[in-house]
Amino acid sequence: MKKCLILLMLAVMLVTLTSCKSIDYGTVINKSFTPAYVEHYIRPMRIGKTTICMPYTRHVSASWSIHVENEEGREWWSVSENYYNSVEIGDTVDRRK
Image (cartoon, rainbow, N blue to C red; front, side, top):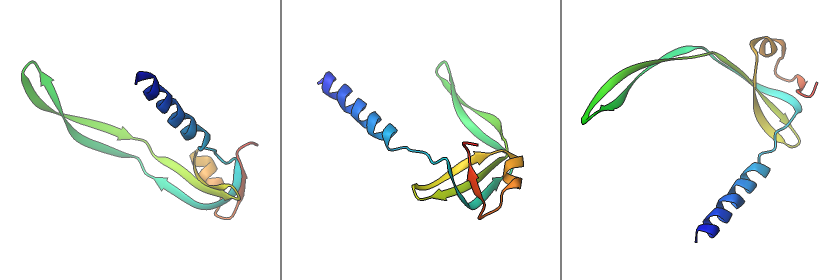
């Protein structure tokens, strides 16, 4: 039973990894900018037999992405701010260069 489970997990991993083909070139069809923000949340923490709620703060950096399409499909690429500002929708891009 254990061997069957391991073989099944390996088969699922193999299918998942081989189906994730990324594209290296194409036409920019969309652009997305997410500004930096601060996230506040409460996380329960157990101390001995007592559970308390601790406040946490997390800073999330700004991010820039472009949506690229070619005959193989579409893919979002995370890019730098300078690259994001240098390309426009309709431009042809190639990350191999």
